[in-house]
Amino acid sequence: MSKYKRILLKLSGEALAKGADTIDVQTLSKVIGIIKSALEQKVQLGIVVGGGNIFRGAALAKAGMNRVTGDHMGMLATVINALAIADACRQAGIEALVMSGFPIGGGVCDPVDHNKAKQALDAGKVVIFSAGTGSPCFTTDTGAVLRAIEIEADIVFKATKVDGIYSADPSKNPNAKRYQTLSFDQAIENNLQIMDTAAFALCREHDLDICVFSMLDNKDTLSAILSGEPLGTICSK
Ligand code: UDP
Image (cartoon, rainbow, N blue to C red; front, side):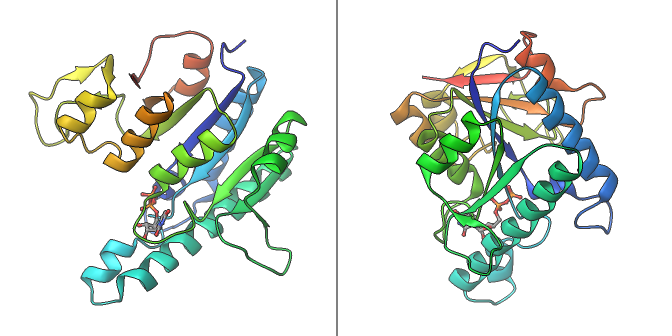
């Protein structure tokens, strides 16, 4: 059983993609497996999902689009991903609720409401937060920290392609050093790119730990960490 009561899991949009498929059914079902085993550890689970498998505002702006419009498209992409995860959760017998950082009508999803989210979590539902912070020029990493603060999560788990935080990108620099733990000051001073500075600064201000772990391991690393294995990197105050 987990020592954490309530966690916020940050998934990038790419965690759902495979090859040419923006949302790959088998990859999605792997994500549902991770969600299921986290719930078996008796944690309450909030999720923030990114949209990078569909659109990123910065890339659209580079191609000539207005940045704010590109960011709106990026945030809408996160809503698409959240709906896909919620649907797959429900098909697996897991109750799920999608909330959006800006209002969307038509019964698509609810607006973010921290009280309603906490009630749903207490009732055992998975709450999937979409549209990041709801404002352009931010990332879903910052959105994840913001929602974690709102739901009073004990920790943010950020799923990545690497098994922790490194001093440099390990895919480019073979001398990159892996940290077991590090402080937010270190992460910000060294400009470590694993999360943006706004996300680290918000965590530091609210004394909220982040655990960075690999989603590409053959084992279910999140569940292993929840049951006490010292995997991933913990960034704290
Ligand atoms: N985005 C935004 N505000 C937010 C969160 C996201 O404008 O608070 C936009 C931004 O364009 C971003 C895109 O949504 O590039 C997708 O989010 P992100 O890049 O964080 O997704 P991830 O890399 O986690 O898949």
